[in-house]
Image (cartoon, rainbow, N blue to C red; front, side, top):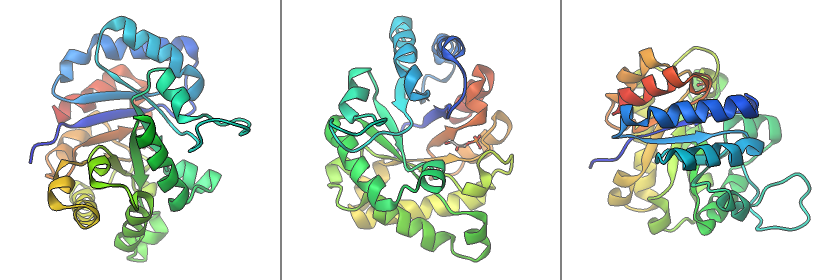
Length: 254
Ligand code: 13P
């Protein structure tokens, strides 16, 4: 089963408008270095329009994503952003259930599940994040934690929609720590996730879902991750803030 790799940059709460525009332009200009890979940029919400305009003006097919959204189409939800608003700005993707959303802002699997359904209904591809903490891994609970997150976050999504979803396995202990999972550790969990998707839908659908690894991915460790059979790309934090590093990672998956 061949899946097109997907490498996404999660810029988190970084950069300013000028730097966001410059970084998007630099990635778009060098998009051809990793033509076999889907590339996606996920800027802070306030810069989505700037980045979208820059990407559109470049004529490149670099995708645009947001880092979060609410599941409601509109209304009295002060401070929140509706899926149609992201579509309106040209977004194709939205990251959901990132561990920082889960731990700092209390997002639960059921909240992620409702958001994933709302994203799909609006025509957005959800990048659904899962991953265990160091404490959970050391207690031998990785499989149980990831299983609960996958089943809870993707419950009730019909097969036709499920195959569009991107899953990101991001072990919390590897995020922003410089401590990347070994390719074997990552592959083991990716294979587990694909097995869960097969049970949720079918082996055919599971074979089409792209599963990214995230957590301290850098140009020098990306190739070993990319060689694993169930690692279909990367969700990149820190290294996505430099065009050289981001494209270096993308080339490893090409
Ligand atoms: P780092 O690449 O900075 O470890 O962040 C990973 C991440 O959280 C991407 O969503």
